[in-house]
Length: 415
Image (cartoon, rainbow, N blue to C red; front, top):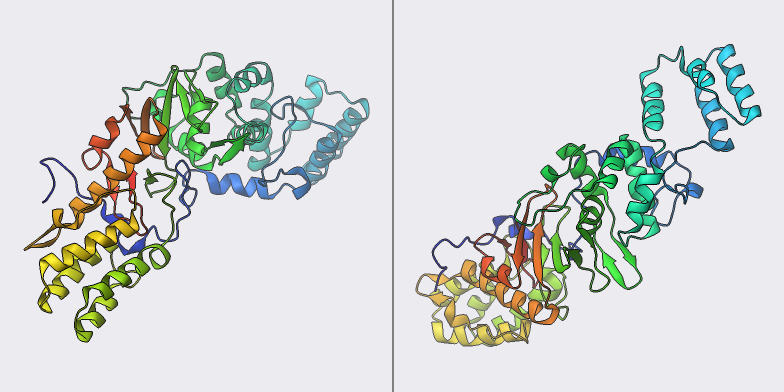
C-alpha cells in the first residue's frame, strides 16, 4: 500500500468538489480565460447580431481579414467621427466616398487634427492590419480548420493589431520542439500574455466528424509542423498522430474510455456509495453516520471513503467486510476495471492518494488500448507542456503528470 518513491499525490484543488458539474471535454474549457478576453469581448459586443456567426463571432470577408472598407463601413466611420472632425475633414471624407477612392493625401487630411487617443488607436490598428491576405490566407488553408475558426482567429488578431506579426509567422512558421516545455516562448512577435489570450479565447469546433479543441486550433495555427489530423481529432506533428490534452482553465483533462461519462457526485457517485453503506449491514447509528459522510461537498469521495472506514471500524466493523463490499462497489462503478480495495486498506486507513493515482492509470491504460495514438502531449493555458511517446504518459501519472481527485467518476490529469 502507498505510492512509489518520487510519486506525487493527487492535486488538492479538486477537493470541495471544485470541478463539480464541470462540463469538460478532453481539449477544452473556457471558464477561466484570463489575458485580454474581456477587452476583446467588449469590441465584439459592439457589432450587430446580423454581422456575427452562430457562435457570436464577427464575420470577416471570405478573402481573409478585413483589409478594406466597404460603403457601409465608410458611412459608419463618418457618423462616429463626425463630432471629432472639422467641417473641412467631413467634406474630404464625403468627397472621397463619392469618388469611391482614397488618395494618401485624403487619409492624411482625414487623420490630421484627431486628438482622441482611442480613435487614433483604432485607426492605427486598422492601418497596421492591412495588406496581409496574400501570406496569411494560403497558410491557414493548409491547416484543416473550419472557415469559422479562421474568421474568428483573424478577428482576434485584428483587434490586437497583430495581423502583421502573424503574417511574418505565416511566411516562415516555427516548428514545435517536442523536447521543449513551453510553446509560447517558441513564437516570436507576441508576448506570453497575448498568446495566452488567444489560447483561452479560441473556441471548440467541429469540421466534418472531427472535433477540434482550442489547444489543437492554436498549435495548428502557430506551428508549421503541426496540423489537425484527418481522424480522431488528434494533431499531426511531424507525421505522428499526437493526442493532445490541453486545458484553457485550471481543471485537468479527462483521460478515460468513452464508456465512462463525466457527471457530478450526486448522480454518479452517491448512489453507488449509498448501496455500499447498506451492504455493510451496520447498526442504525453507524449507518446514519456513514450516510452523513456520503453527501456533496466537504472533500473528494476517495477521502470520504477514508472517513467512512474510520467510522465503520469504530462501530465494530471488520477490515475484511469493508474491503469485500468496497471491491464490489468499485466493480459497480468501473465494470471494465479490476480494483481491489484491499490494496489500499490497512490499519492506518484507506490510502485515497494511492487509490486515485491507480484509478487514473487504469483508466488511461484502457483509453490508450482503444485509441493507440503515436504519442501524447499534456498542456495548459500558460503554454507549458510535456510530450510522451506511445503509452509513456501512463507511467508519468503521479510522477510528472498531476492527478486531481475526482468529484465524479473520473480523475483529471494536468501538467
